[in-house]
Amino acid sequence: MTMTYTEALDILTNQDQAHLLAFWEQLDEAQQQALLMQIEEIDFSEIDRMRVALKQQAEAATAGQGAFEPAPVLTLEEAGDPAVRELGHRALRSGKVGVLLVAGGQGSRLGYDGPKGCYEIGPISKAPLFEIHSRKILALERQYETEVPFYVMTSEANDAPTRAFFELHDYFGLTPARVIFFQQGMWPGLDPDGNLLLDRPDHIFVSPDGHGGILSALRNRGVLEDMADRGLNALFYFQVDNPLVEIADPDFLGQHFANEAEISVKVCAKRDASEGLGMLVTREGHTEIIEYSDLTDAQKAERRPDGQFRLLYGSVAIHIFTFGFLKREADEALPLHVAHKQIPYCDATGAILKPDTPNAYKFEKFIFDVLPDAERSLNVEFARAEEFSPVKNAEGNDSPATTRRDMVAKFARWFDACGVRVPRDADGTPTVKIEIDPCYALNVDDLKAKLPADFKIEGDVLLQA
Ligand code: UTP
Image 1 (tube, rainbow, N blue to C red):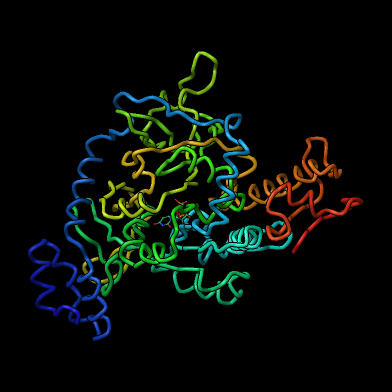
Image 2 (cartoon, rainbow, N blue to C red; image 1 turned 90 degrees about the horizontal axis):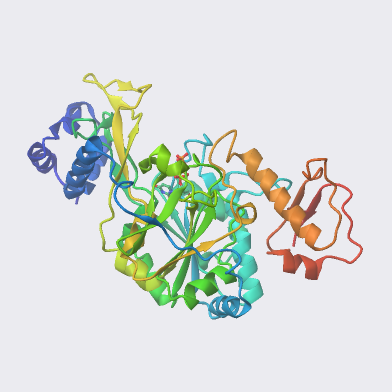
């Protein structure tokens, strides 16, 4: 039973938030019930934490201050040991590896109407991001004759369309029982005085609680039990917007196991001083990620005597977690990150106003804040051109155009390695489009094994299983 109006009014009056019921008399019964349900779900101890976070950020950003060192990184030259890779192969064959995708974000920069995973990115096939990820998992299941459960975190706003999309496309060939959707939590925002906001007379403004919300969601939605039931001991974690990601690649898995890490982080060299990657550092014996916005320009640009950036390696949110660590961390309260945003709100008459400038604050948890809690963690370098080109913006850097370009360039390098001539312009950019379905070849070795000896590229190439 939902709480009553009187109970809600009592709680809100105590919390100085009775304005949330300002339009009560004008609402119909269904709207009143929905509003009561929202009020019931608010955890006011979290709201207190948000107010503290708001106050702290008004005082000063501290994460980039104090003594810290660049974190140690296993470089590309050091990774790639066949014996270590074999540990990865073994883990996959044993069926103890699951895949965790965070897809609950709002994709506001891309401005696409729908879950970002439905965005059609295949340079020729127009395969959506979800299809590319799913086909990689299917390819792993086939190659290793194993089961790879696929956990997909959604949010209230995109859960139903995400499920419907998978259903419509027959789960892209995956076994539906191994595709597990779960919703992350939603959090209210606060105005500068610490008040919750109504974005409609009958609705409190809420937004997803950040990719770090995955921890509480895994616990609250029963996903940890599901993982335990399936006997998983490692979870490969990634974001929806990067079709180049090498899901559960055996080298990375092997390094994770060989180093007995609780969390492993793939890192790459930043593009330039201003690129917005979180930097890997060690402080007081623990590894952590300092957000780009918490570093000064001088810290971002500082160089070593050899000319390289002092803070060079950043995270692109590709991780492996041991199951035990995820389970332990699910009970920890992650720190809150505050963002100043434009949030629609109701004025005193109930009219909805859409501000042009930031007027209020959103709060998010970030997954990388678990790092300092790990007994052992590992940072492994990857080649950026091979594995990272996210769709973040509608245009410019990290946009669909650059992602498709990078996909084609990667497949072109596979053909180079197979000795197939790729037509290119004077800059070395392929003049044809190339796309390879992950179930045809997951990597260059698969392609070498499959490609007919007399294969020639004479126009666009789409290889599908
Ligand atoms: P981003 O930080 O790029 O955010 O998320 P976004 O929502 O996709 O895009 P913008 O910032 O609104 O333009 C990185 C990854 O984390 C997931 C996203 O779905 C994406 O895979 N994410 C982000 C969540 O799952 N939940 C969140 O609350 C936030």
